[in-house]
Image (cartoon, rainbow, N blue to C red; front, top):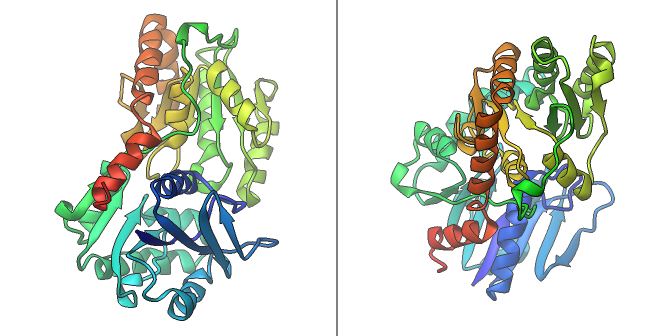
Length: 367
């Protein structure tokens, strides 16, 4: 088949995240199965406008905000009638392909935005986006196939008019290879928390720092490692909080981690923390689990899907005090912690891109 995909970023984009990892893994497998794939995505400074990557074509237009207009124009001029299937990935703002594409279409959601508007945009645009999102979602819900990655997002979509029967779930996958022998992993000598990912407002990294400070009152030897890029004013705010913390000597900020650093940190730390406002799926949670490290997370969409409470990690209320209680509870009972590590590691082995692609093929009837 010829498959045309609209999405706002590709894997090469400087701000690419978990959604782009999933996209690339699926597309590479489509190409391996002899499908012809073109991606229309947003551009970025210094990007190559058009190139072939691992057998699929990438066309970069405009930027993350203007790509929607440019994509419509490019489709009308160059791609109309080319594809057998058009996949529109909705990342906050839709491309509205159903209103101008004549070919068969499929909508792909990782998550809805909702409260994230108030963390990522300034007034009055955050309020406008928050109010507009339910309206355009109901416009998109008029019919057709939909794919998403978690029960939380499926429920979200159903809340805004999508037919549950038309929403197909696919598994997530992880890039990192699960460790072969859990017993061979050597943790740090002192209990250590890992904060992994970009330090930006919707991730609420500040909550993790505060939770660490509270938990340290109960576990004096506790340490923390923060790995991720400091983004904008929020990143600077977190940095100042680290410097002013009464336990600053026990907080290590290492910046963005390389692939090798990621694997080592996820193996050697005792717990990983995730406190995002909302996710499609907690990809780094599953990655850490594959390296023998359970998670303590907030009870929000996506994170509650990627942790089984009390089995592969702990799910807490959305405040630093509750997060600290989860940290202390997970670390104090060594036998329970050992079982949690093993359960998280075993579950991670079922969450593969091979399974994700199998689910995806079935959802779009390519199998």
